[in-house]
Length: 313
Image (cartoon, rainbow, N blue to C red; front, side):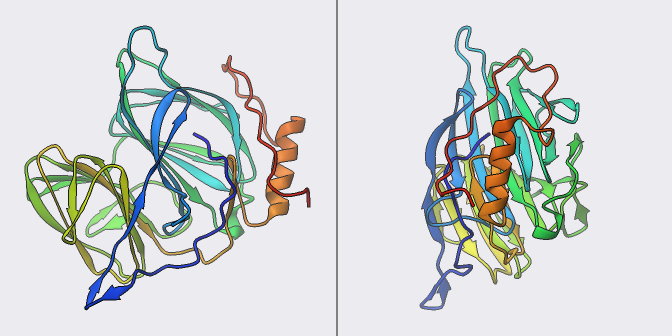
C-alpha cells in the first residue's frame, strides 16, 4: 500500500486535561483506494502524523469482490526507511519482494517487511475467499537503523488470550506475561481486540507510550466517549490504563509506542530523516538502479513515483 503526500513528524505528544479529565483527540479517517480496494487511512493525517514509530495505518475492507473482480492487485513499488506490517483478518494475499520472498498471508497472521536501505514488493489477492479485511501499518525505522539491509519475516502464530468476553491478540510488543515474536527496532505495542460478547475491559498500559485506537468493526466507548469506525482516537502519553466497551462483534486495533523524537519525512512509499534521503531514493527507483531489484514472478507494471514536492537537494 502506498502514501503520496509529504508528512513531517507530529509536533505534539500530549492531549489536554480539562476539569481533571484527559481529552481524546478525535481524528476523522480519510477514504482512499489502493490496488482496487477501498481503505480508511487513519495515519498520517493533518492532525496526527505518528504514534510512537507507527507512521501509517490503513484499514482495508471488509470488502467483498463481486463477480469476476480480481481483488487486490498492487504492482511493484519501492520502500525505504520503514517496516511494512500487514495484519490479515479475512482473505489471503500473496506477497512477493525483491529479496525473492514469496509468502501468502492468511487470517490471524502477520507479514513484516523491513525495507531498510531499499526493497520492492507486490501484493495480490489469491485463494478462493472473495473477501478481504486487513490492516497495514508502517513503522518508521530509527535513524541508526534506516540504512540496514532489507529482510522479510512471516509470523503465523501470535499470543492470544481472552478476558471478560474479549479475545486479545498481541501483534507487536509485550503485554503482561505475553510477548510477540515480531521483530522491531523501537518499543512498540499493537493489540487486536475482538468482542465475543458485549463487554467492558480495562487495559493497563505503559505511560511512556503514545496510544492510539482505531475501531475496525462496530462502535466503541473509549474512556466514556463513543467512537465509530470512521474515527481514530489519539490518547497521547501518560495513560496508565484505558477502558473500552463494545457490543458483540466489535473489533478494534490498539497501537502505541515510545516516540522516536526524530524528524521523520514520508513521501510516496519512502520514509526518511532528510529530504536528501528521499530525493535519492526517488531517483534510484526512477533510474532502476540495483538498490531496487526486480520482483520475480510479478507481471504488473512498476509504479511511477509522483514528482517530489520540493526541488532536488
